Length: 277
Image (tube, rainbow, N blue to C red; front, top):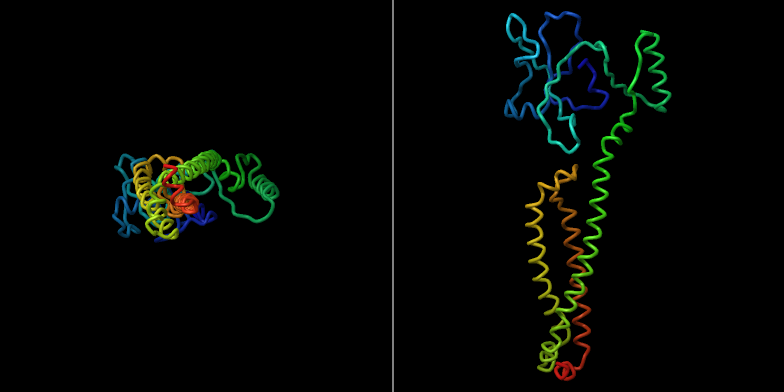
């Protein structure tokens, strides 16, 4: 990695400095940079700038040389977007390595025009070098995120269908539960209970059941979060906003069903409700 390679993508420098300018002196001590995960895993968060580590890939007859850590950068997604951060060591090197060097260019303007200007510049420096595989970072990210985005959209579609079916089923179940207590409601009203008291009692009883169901559902979510991590990223499987929205929808639907069914039951004459049973 040459000096300035990570700066165009705004990689955060947490400690130390970027890779220094290097010369073609292969006997000079090697320089490296490490990421935050490396520091947390192998140094337990301690300062590692200026310390040395073994560089086994460059072993020689004199033994395994040491490389000096010159800086620490933030964790970068080097692997899959949903993968956890792994410890990385970035070796400082001379830019323009052979045979196929990779460059990161930060520029403004239309991407095709920028790419053409880069090709012209490289051709003026060395007409034998070809520029290939170049594309904007946004296009590359779209390609990388295409599969996770499709999975997320499919999961959202199934989740919406499941929530709709759950809401409809819950509405029918609660309404049927309250309607099944028409005789009880009739007896209560015959004994002097007011319609408002009946409605509050019915809605309160349904609220207890719904609360127990939401608690059980949260427990199932906690167990299944390991499976969900393979599908979503950027949010935790136990995302508070999503869970609160789903629970709120079920509470509103069940409360509405209990309220409508209870009001209908209290609108019937108590003697007729008792006689009907």
